[in-house]
Amino acid sequence: MKEQKRTLTREQVLALAEHIENAELQAHDIHKITNDYPDMTFADAYDIQWEIRRRKEARGNKIVGLKMGLTSWAKMAQMGVETPIYGFLADYFSVPDGGVVNTQELIHPKIEAEISFVTKAPLKGPGCHIGDVLAATDYVVPTVEVIDSRYENFKFDLISVVADNASSTRFITGGQMANVEDVDLKNFGVVVEKNGEVVDVGAGAAVLGHPASSVAMLANLLAERGEHIPAGSFIMTGGITAAITVEAGDNISVRYQGLGSVTCRFV
Image (spheres, rainbow, N blue to C red):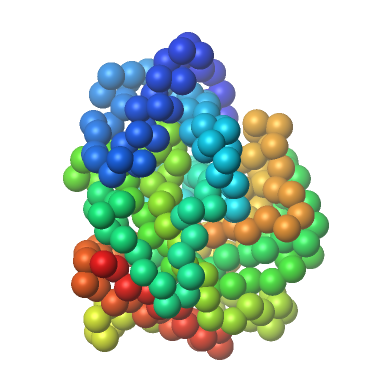
């Protein structure tokens, strides 16, 4: 993502941010925005995402964390990109463990099993690496991410999805917090059950070989915009499993080896 040139005017960025955020808030789908702006770059897309973030903060929402997306090497190869993407998490995205996710507020939700890091020291790129991340981590905690693209049929390209806040919508943290030295983050296993049936399994290494790599990449991506990861940040590191479609009536339970489980219901 060295591509930092911009093709959109400030007015276009503001208009697109409003258009995409309205789709999220009103739960209706839209065409991918690169249909109308085929020359858009990643820099444009992040400008839109940061404007959506600013709109939420201006409305009194708190930003409570960050998330990484596209963190499997296989997925990146498939999409022809070299780096994952990131998005932000607003306060109303958070659902308590065992809680309820209202599908009427969403368009076509899917869930992914993840592990999240909470930092105790700031992390700054460029050049941030796994060692820096592990030293700056307060604890890790199991998390289920609910993703929901605002684009029709979940069809999009990478630049459109960055502008759409990396399909962020809801997340559920649960299980047990643990120190990084107490978890084999590379090899710990995850089992996803939907309505009592196992639908997917995975291991921590699915996230860039080691979930801490994801946090390091986030610090390096943020550095491109002169931003960093502050101490006390909550960071979802990306899907350990594939994205699994859910609908009203579904019960989800994700078991994390040595870290308990996270559950939620979709209504």
